[in-house]
Image (cartoon, rainbow, N blue to C red; front, top):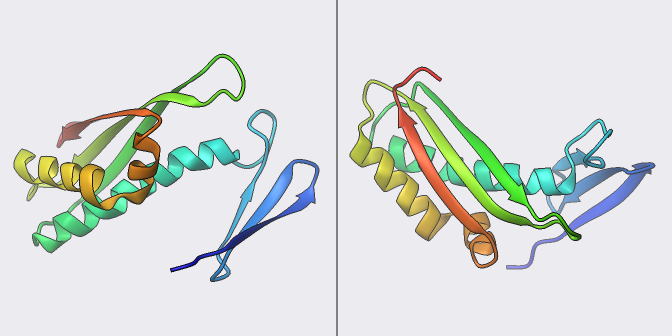
Amino acid sequence: MKVTASIKQIEGFRLEGLTHNNKKVVMDKAEGGEEASPAQLLLMSLGGCTMMDCIHIITKARKKIEKFEIKIEAEEAETFPKVYTHIHLTYIFQGEELDSALIERAIKLSEEKYCRVHAMLNEKVKITSSYILNEET
């Protein structure tokens, strides 16, 4: 299946991305910009992709998630192109119906089978993860 996207300049470094099905995102330069940078969007894409997988897996198991967040930390190279060298995802779950076995299964399935962003990045970047279940953060 072929998908397309386009980027157009709004003003200065402020850009608008448009997907093949008319979904928009605005981006800007990393420092001093009003919007997230393309590299920051990459981190959010990784988090969003794996989060959607986990939600699907957990709700398919007929368990309720009360609150779910992923915190993403990345280390970038000091020299250009300043690629991310290590990304760590901390999955934070709240829910009385949730247990460690289900959470570990959901994360593993997402990271090893379903999350295409993880699959694309994992070849070049060290990606690690951990989770917190039912603890105040």
